[in-house]
Amino acid sequence: MNQVIEGVYQVSKGVNAFIVDGDDGVVLVDTGLPKRHGAIVDSLRSIGRSVDDVRAIILTHGHTDHFGGAAALIRATGAPLVASEIDAAVVEGRRPMPAPPILDFPVVRLLVNLLPNPEVVSVDHRITAGSVPIAPDFEVIATPGHTAGHIALLLNRQGGVLFAGDAAMATRRGGVQRGLMNRKSVIFDTSLRAMADRDFAIACFGHSDPITTNASGAFRAFVASI
Image 1 (spheres, rainbow, N blue to C red):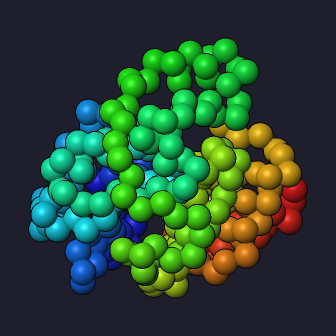
Image 2: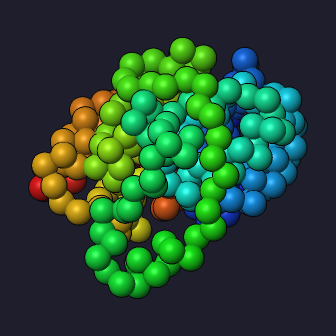
Image 3: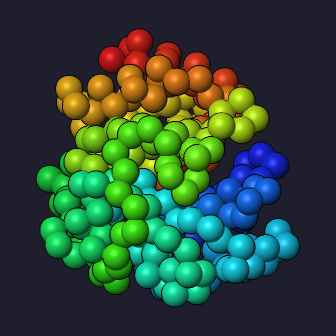
């Protein structure tokens, strides 16, 4: 586990999930791969929290590596699950899981097919945009492209913290890129612009290290180049 800023922790176990600690309890953003939820439980203990302190679990999208631990964590915490209106159907097993946009590369297809199947779970709150009813310090930004119902989350704290999920990645030099699983497209670039239009100091991602300085500036610089 790595502390991004005070109260925001990145748990990395093949993919990044996040613990957001606050006065009213803990919010989890994404839950990682199936059967690896123990890393999140252990990380809660390491910051003096427990599963009883979790008040909400929010998913950025419906892919195995982001909601795979949701069912186990809901059983452990009793917390409500939040997902987008579109991707909730995937999480609940009512629609097939969408393939990442770039599965025509055989090696990528092979790696994705090796992932374990997630346990389906009921979504308690379906959201599209605006605030999260049970976590009003988060703003939802619709960012379709990686999946049809992908969302990013903007936390109103310390200059703003964006949780971009798989809608973007950081470069090693602290810039922004689409990421290995995303193609250039009108819908995807519109989502990148939607994030770049917000102000935030920090950006967290599903598959890269965070950007911790002038993160919205990094998004705007990338958007200006596309």
